[in-house]
Amino acid sequence: MSNRQTKTDVILIGAGIMSATLGSLLKELMPEWSITVFERRASAGEESSNEWNNAGTGHSSLCELNYTVEQPDGSIDISKAVKVNEEYQFSKQFWAYLVNSGRIRNPRDFIVPVPHMSFVQGQQDVTFLKKRFEALSRNPLFQGMEFSDNPAKLMEWIPLMMKNRALNQPIAATRIESGTDVNFGALTRILFDQLKSRNADIKFNHQVDDMKRMGDGSWELKVRDVSSGTAERHTARFVFIGGGGGSLHLLQKSGIPEGKGIGGFPVSGLFMVCERPEIVAQHHAKVYGKAALGAPPMSVPHLDTRVIDKKELLFFGPFAGFSPKFLKFGSMFDLITSVKPSNLTTMLAAGAKNMSLTKYLVQQVMLSKEQRMEALREFVPNAESGDWDLVVAGQRVQIIKDTAAGKGTLQFGTEVISAADGSVAALLGASPGASTAVSVMLEVIERCFPQHKMAWEPKIREMVPAYGVSLLNNPDILHDIQASAAQSLGLADTAKHGELINK
Image 1 (cartoon, rainbow, N blue to C red):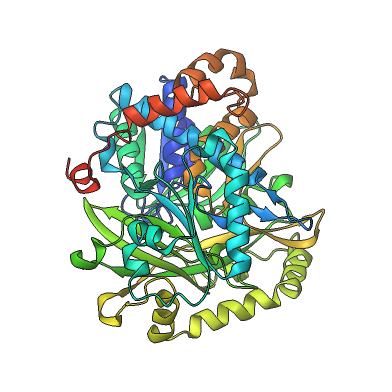
Image 2 (cartoon, rainbow, N blue to C red; image 1 turned 45 degrees about the vertical axis):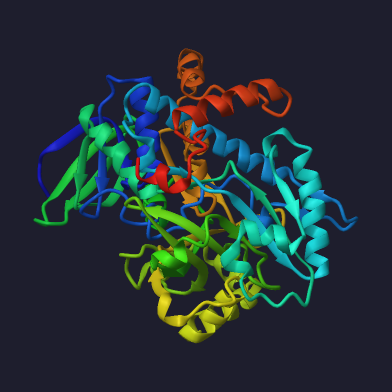
């Protein structure tokens, strides 16, 4: 162990979109604070934030059917859709602020306009989609959404999906042009470059092995340089654990009571990717369908236009899989070593309750490429196997905890766990994740720095104008904020998407 001990104000563990966002917010609020980042990989955004490891959708509930639930009386509950949409507005506003203040030079490097659509087949789902459309389109957050069950109109919207489609059952779709495709890997790298230019100390190839609370309330981290094997000690007044699937182990090592009784269940993903320009050119949208009966929410099938390195691609998936690793570059022992006396009964209860999920994941793992192509042909009837390649996505670790719903409940979403004194916070969970990073990191700031709330609020409102404002009750403010953010991010341009990408 090196005797060198480095003190810093803030330590961020993990160089993904969450740490990048929190670091960027804190640098705006307190430029004089010292920030150190530890990342076990050789560069930023290599795990879940990477553009090849996630769906890249700016999750704003414009197309995700699992965010709107049909109630027993037939009505549609849109509360989660509204919440996720408002949170994504926060992200866009902060990114617009960074563009306007010169921190981000070209927003086109990470965000482009792509219509968001929902697509369903069969009378029951068409009826659901129509009701969903009616419920959402009354809400100012979803202005501009269109519905059609006319095959001719759908041929205009999604020609690749409609070509040679057997119209032996009702079909319908909704479409909204204000959707986006976000390259969170590129954005993560942009934000870390910016933090580095503002004197943040970013240490790649550094693994945090342990952490303990000191007598003065600060935290001491044992950090290993992966390249040399040298161990170092680093202390900070505040630590954020933003290591994706790796966060659970570090939360457990912190020993804070808030982290007890929480487990994690890893789910891996696969996408089919098409790079052939003549096929890609026939589809320009993110189109979400409905998950198969009994399938988990993270398995909702979707056919997405993605823009990576200024090149358009098509992603279809995700196909779920199982690996005991908590990170794509993790260990096969991650799952077993996460089971502790404090979460053992919770994990066992979750195992007993989720036998159907386990069976589903095993079935998914066993699928052949041709079986995956059959699933794709539900979306693209003409899809040929030779045009599509299989890409392994990132690992997602779903939270398992005891809730009002029962012991060992599997949670689908993101959650902040923080110590009572605000000296440490960890982010666990998965989707909608990256899209709501700004909202989630503002929650971390509120929880962990309550003493600064009054002083910081004017600056937070400057960065995120909707902060503390009910957008639903102020449609005029909503319209102005949305228009301003779209202008700054280059999303208001009506030019053809090909021109936009190549700008």
